[in-house]
Length: 588
Ligand code: ADP
Ligand code: MG
Image (cartoon, rainbow, N blue to C red; front, side, top):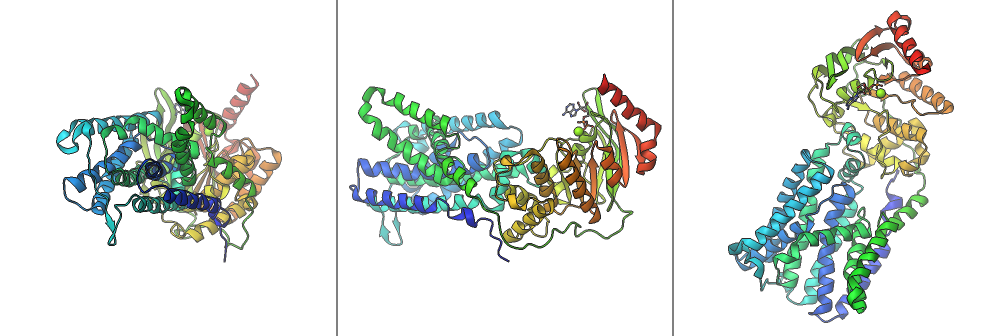
């Protein structure tokens, strides 16, 4: 078995970057061992490390952090104070201060529980400002605006790194290691979870990703990396002061990440080098230098929204090839299946959801039995989607109870419900648009407690099997955003199937499909039914519902008006009236 999902991507762009790095190293070591040029290289190397941290939190996880200079400063001051005041060695001081930066980063990430988007960005600004104030005013510890002098450079394995070239070598080695780690992170389970949160937090959580935890971890990793960069910076320059770690430096770091391409550590390398070298190049312009500098940065960002590295990403997307190799068929029956078709897997009791005065759900009872296809129908606005949202944990019910596999999950978080075997699709497609088709489905396959979740190779194969099942394996490497609407729906179904759920919830999978696609959907549903998968489906197409449904529940104005076998339900006078009512309404 040799299905290798990352082969095509793995070495892309790495050789040119290594080549550039070797060039930089040669130039750096031709320059004198101290002084102006060495300082530029030292600054570029340590900044680039800090910018790699932003790749994690901003590029991968989508959270804007305007406090990276603060973490850089924490690392720098930790090493400065540790080595000059506390008599620690450089490396212990570096480890401690980077760990301290990480702890504060995790705490900052915790703020994302209550705040999102711009508000979270503002909290990071506040954090940044507080750190600047502390560095400036806690004179006993930081020496205030005068800064810390005579920060020593260490020895490593008995070799003194006091010489500028040697210390730069330490910075470059660290940079290479950090870049490599961040690059590999992108194709790990954690990295995919981060990108899923970035692209669609709701979908990520119902696909089993603990989005809050992932954001906290991203902030922690980013702060850790920032702290490492700062620690090296302090020893490199041997003198630091609070004005080197202010809000405006955070903006510079952010610009470096965005300019190069925040989604790749290689992009961030390019961005950092450019923003450090550009001012040097432009110095001959004298007075107008800042204006030209600002304008070039703005132009680059306007025309290359994905950053300079985006060019390489787009080329790689065009070159993507299908993945060869046999995979085991998709296991559609979960391990918990005992074959008892009278067993109720999913149950709601007296479920209500009110939005202000509107009763979107009003005391709804529902029982979904193992191996059945259960259709939930009703006119527009009757509460069908709300029911699925309450069942999957996106909404808290006003009252009532949700039981899944015998456990009360009424108050469980969406990702926990997914972990125990609930998977869904959305009426309005929610995919991870920055990721490939395969990666989208891999996020589903990586559901905790799934038999494959911990085995990267098996996850790839499970995801391919799910894509095979919906007929999209040939598109595995395409960006989901490039697929037609109908195919995007299938990717969502595949993402849910890859989790090997006990119950699959489909919210209007036929919406927006053309006739041929609807026909294919019917085929797909019949195949799923044939495998005995338990499905709760919302659909408007009565022919389809009649063909596949074993049970039907009808909602109208949030109330259950009928429930039972298709024959009985579809001829029930209230149901006929509700649907005729709607037909009349639409005609009007
Ligand atoms: P259906 O899926 O059956 O078409 P929905 O469950 O989407 O209906 O909506 C049921 C009712 O609840 C509608 O009147 C809708 O406007 C309302 N509703 C749904 N979600 C919200 C929300 N987040 N806030 C306020 N009202 C909502
Ligand atoms: Mg709906």
